[in-house]
Image 1: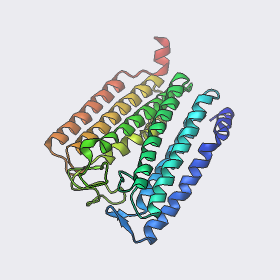
Image 2 (image 1 turned 180 degrees about the vertical axis):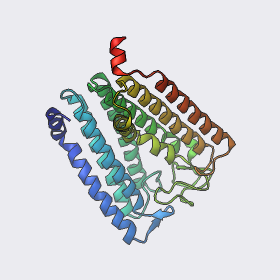
Image 3 (image 1 turned 30 degrees about the vertical axis):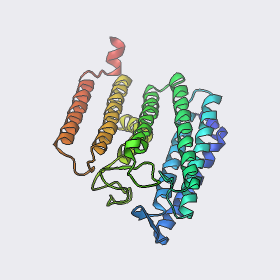
Length: 309
């Protein structure tokens, strides 16, 4: 990373505040999980603040790194990142505040106050979605000189938007569980708060829309990590175009996996109990990814050969 890149990161102070603040909150919430005996919707009451604070810490750190890749300062991107920080803090204030009140934050319209807070959360996440998209557009218009990094950033930002959209079915009218004052659910086919996987809490008895949402969101980290691994482990003699094509294959497979997991959840199917249709779709995805990878490797060229051509 260049000196100019370091200056870009230091200039955006809101992100540099968000990351340690949410990291510290994650530690506090982890202590709460251990010492607070209260349970809410089947899990420790502090588990949601813990998961969201970890997620926002990773999100803020990743955005700061991506902004550092811009060849020059972008006031639009910095403004959008500041909006991301503001909406993230709003989300965390509501989530923690509702925990302190001993009630849920998501889908909760049981009282006028709870309904107002839920509406605030919904509005803030919509604003975050738009700001995230603006950052993506700026980075696409002004990509880093490194093509592999440019594709990793573009795919990561785009697929994370897909992950945000994967959460939309949770609040559609048909997803309301039929309980008075509850305006949505993340489980499909079973009530929220039933048996779930350790830590993440994903339902083991029905579909869970949080799975596709989670996987899609973390494309923001997964695709840059894939780019780093390609640079680290592929032979140095392989040309840059090969790395880019492999990254595009990985991004395509990641996007289809996000859709597949969301589709599985919408059918009321637990993650670890896929039916034959889901297994077939997964097998097709694996085969298509392997075939595309093989085709990319088959046409790779060494840099010296490319120069001669």
